[in-house]
Image (cartoon, rainbow over all chains, first blue to last red; front, side, top):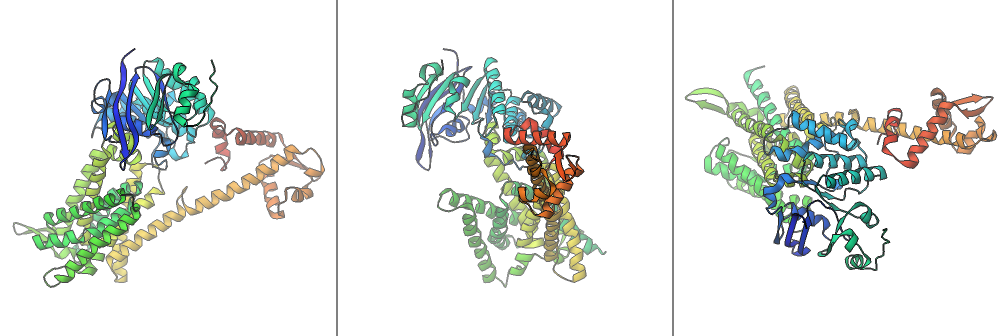
Length: 244
Length: 386
């Protein structure tokens, strides 16, 4: 197997002493496009947030290419759930994308022409250049998600974490986003996506992790995306037809 | 204008600027009420600080009192984290408790403390010029001017240095944390600045006006702009305008300065609330009316498109068929005619080429709901402008 991009060891996370993730061991190889699937409350977002140091686990550790997240921040880009921010915030699409460059700038230093140029390039890549000066509340749900994707692209990272990037977007945007994700994988990046729509897993992803508080299974979609694992994860007799 | 008047206006303006800066971020973070909590809860800090230093403008007193502000925030967050009560309830529990301790301390020591409850609530801006700062025997101006001036200088420096960090952590906490800009550090930094500003402004304008100066200018600015820097600039302008104008209103009416400034802040907000170009009440009402008319127009055009029969398209039958009142039907008919979308011949209405195309396009959009098609429609139509 290739290099391991993300390694999670014995990770346990609790809210008010109630575990939402229990003893997770996970190895994500470099260069996969991976879906994290599981029912509501399975801890999918929590897993991503714990890997990124946004939530503090009560036990376990996470490494990115063998080192702690704090040391590898610049290798990682994160797209939060669209609903987690206030879209009435007084700012423009371009400005939101520029925020992706803040990490490499560090404290105090301000973004300049170079940062603006890469933000404009990212906007073009997601087909949103024409909207660069638009106030973000004036964008549709799909457009807002594209802006978030552009913000992650601008970070020029090796590993991308995305929390439900397809939620509330139109079909065109969904295809545009998945094409960009596939391009990233082609360029050797690792992409990890919290995903809801089980039907599209075989079509979009090559790697999958089943999660329901505990890790159920992880591996290549063609090997482990089956009724057995789905039933273990969702607790009911789950049947999806997998296209060959 | 005598020098005391100039000094009062200068102090009021500096207080307004110092309040508008943290206030803008409090409003954007939906934490307006925390400024109310801080402004009341610092009272025991001020009283105890006064026992220790015997000087209302001492930096030690300001830091002691600001510490009470931080304690308030910590207590509110602690109570809220237990999950037993919500944030607003936690605020409502913490600050009256601390404020009442302050009130009791003042009452118990009323004889030796140069503080009373009226001054605490409304400030003593009119007396500010009497308390002078002497350096080597030379009078360099009122003490409160120097106090608020120093606080403002620190606030502006922090704003310039950490503007980017404040912006990203206010807009997107998750991203901010993942990029390494600890939201907790920025949060407590903002709380500290708010607390220090509140204490510095307290002596001049009191516990109630401080809240108004933090929230009202920022709330007014929020309705007028979609740019954070412009929002800050507008909030500062509204604050200074209200401070200066409020002072003169107080002068003409021979009334409380603090009360007049607060009233001005309220009037400014009311005017913006009514007349703001896109978010104001009048603009919103106009837009809704326009959208209603457009929906009617579209319904009417669609009716024409779907019905070839002459009787369905006879002017007099329209009222019955679409089930509209005459006035409304008339105005829709006029609107369609004005835009060359329909033709009326011998009382029979028919779509023109333009009307036909327009209807197809609109229906297409409504059915597919695709972003790409909506863009050029937005220019013609309120209906599609979100």
